[in-house]
Every structure is written in C-alpha cells, then in structure tokens.
Image (cartoon, rainbow, N blue to C red; front, side, top):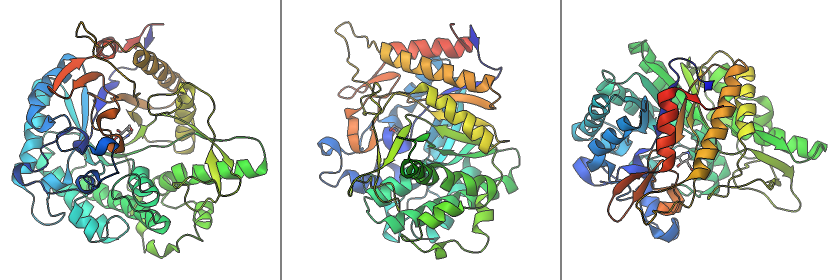
Length: 453
Ligand code: IFM
C-alpha cells in the first residue's frame, strides 16, 4: 500500500460561476462572466452559465453526495457579485446567507469548507470602472474579501484569496479568451500586479484580525522546459517560466518581482504601476500555497511571428507538443511533471505547506444504457498523479492535501458544458447527479488514505 500522511486532506474543488446558476437570485448582479458568456461567439454553442449545475438550489443534495464520497474538504468559491453586487459598499445579506446554508450543510455531512474568495467572477461594475488593470480594484477586492471573511469565519478555517491569477490576467486581458475578453498586453501586466496587491491587502487584514485563520493563494504554476538545448530555446523557457511562475511566486515569497522578467516586459509596459511598498504588501505571510496542475509545457523560440498571445513580451515563443496522450481539452498527460513541479517549488520557495488544490481530466464520458458511467481513464489519471504526489512527499515536500477538479461536470468557461471533468456525471436536462466509477474509486482512496501498490 502507498499510504499518505495522517491528516492528509482529500477533497474536490469547484467555482461559483461554474456551478451555481441562479444568476439573478437574491440580489446578485452580473459579473464579467455573465457579460462575456452572453456575447455571441465567446462560448462553445453560445451557451452561458445561467443555470450550470443549479447548485444554488441543489446545494443540500450536493453536500449529501460530497459526504457520501468520504471527502474531508469541499473547496468552493464565493461569488463576489452575489455577496457585494455593486463591487463596493454594503454586503448583500441574502447573498451571504447562501454560503452560510451551504457551509452548514457541508458540516452536517462531515465535510469541511475551504473557501476561495475570487475565482474569476469580477462584478461587471468594477470592470466598467477599469477592472484589474486599475489599481482601485485591488482595494475593492480587499474590502470584499474582509467582509466575506467576517461573515463566514466562524464556520471556515481555510481561505484562499485568489484562484489562478495568471488566468485572470493573461487569459482575461492579453489573450482575451476569458472574460472580460480584452487583448491588451500592458493591461494584463497591470492586472497581475493588482491581483497580487489585492491578495496581499486581503491576507494581511484577515491575519491581523484572526491569526488562527489559514490564509493562502492558489496559483497554476507550470513546469516549463526548452524544446532543445539551444541558447534561444533555453532563453524562451526562462522567459515563459518567468511569466507563468516567477512573476507570481517571487513577489509572494520574497517581496520582489524577478528583475529579468521586468526587463523582458520593459517594452510592453513601464513599471510605474508598482508603487511604494506594494511588493512588501504582496509578500504577506502565507499559511499555504495551492497548486493547480494539469499539464507541463515545452517551448521554443518560434519562427517568423508564431507566438502565443499569453506569452506577453516574449516575442515569438511557441509551445511544442510532445506527442503524449492528451485529455479532451487537448492537454498532454504527464504525471511525472507534477512531481518535478512540486519538488522545484518546495526547493525554490521553501517553508510554506503546499496543497494540490486542483488536478483532474476532461474526458468524453457517456451515460451507459444501464445508468452507470465508467471512466477508467480518469481513474488511471488520478492514480498516476497521486503517485507523483506521494513521491514528492517522500522526497521531502511538505504537501498536505489533494483536491480533484472537479466534483461534478460543470460549465467549463469558454467551452460551456461541452467538457466533462467531474467525478460525478451531470445529466444537464434533468440535473441528475450520477457518480462515475472514478467517484467510487476516489472515495475509497480517501477512506483508506492510501493507494494500492
Ligand atoms: O475549470 C477550470 C477551473 O476553473 C480553474 N482551473 C482549471 C479548470 C479546468 O480548466
């Protein structure tokens, strides 16, 4: 048996806009994702997230199902436009009450809540006022985060400020494939800074008032390798590792942006957006770092003008497929790279406990005629990645938990409901939840705290 440490956290993760639906309920106002998903051509089949898993109304059933899967934790996010619909000012008690009901239902079923304060659903009014490229949004986030924390802290120990700020900044403001759909490289870099500043302000304020709370952030760092040993490819890997990983990790851990990355970005944006003690504020002490891992990248200096829109300021860098098996997202499956990533992170950024806060695979799952969903490829994927996690722990990484993305199939951003990541199958026409074979497998792993050898 491959045993995990005592008290290892087993869980699943979701995000508000991907599951809740009920977009007009109880005072909620639009987020950038409501606007984006209602813009023709942005989402597969033009399918917005208005209903998604209708979790807003079905949370009690979901909490029971989560409990039946032996899960210690449910990681979910709070919708800012539900709790503070105008992006500033008073809290909407009806919005906050939803999360109180959800948390109480989880606790009744033996599941601990793990709250993410921001998983991409910025109130549209704040985007209209400049969005993340505007400095004021950092302060608006901190106010919202503290108010939400105050409202729920009696029931919740673990708090994640932001989920994957790389996506918010680079997919949202550089590539434009995520809300708000902007394609302005300079804006994306300012967005990075204000997201991190918002994190730092919020984390400091929460810690100051409640030293017992566990406060961290979730990033989606990626192992980046050069396609060849050439100087050009190695420099491409340095630049992309800088943008994807060090641009976030260095200020969070060491209170300083990496000088080489700021140099790379000099032609994109001047650094006047970094003011006073901002970098120190960002480096608020972390109780944990969450890591969302799906796939590594191999990059090379591209020919002509081939470049990826998220590789801001990097010129003609492109990622190169390695010919590995891929998920239904087209993402290459490489569990060893998770081990490599965890070991590298804990070496370069030691001292803070790590959690894998997302890992999982999209597959073309089918509901069988007998009413079951068999997904052996997902079991193999999770098994392989859990072995990589276990090896990292054996190698000395202080890794304390693992969360599957995701609980039930849900609304996968620009892919709508066309991608299925869940342990539980969502039959959208009936909203029936049907645990897949991977759900039973994962429940058993969580119960035993171990994998078979
Ligand atoms: O669905 C997303 C989630 O919202 C953030 N991390 C990656 C998942 C799969 O794309």
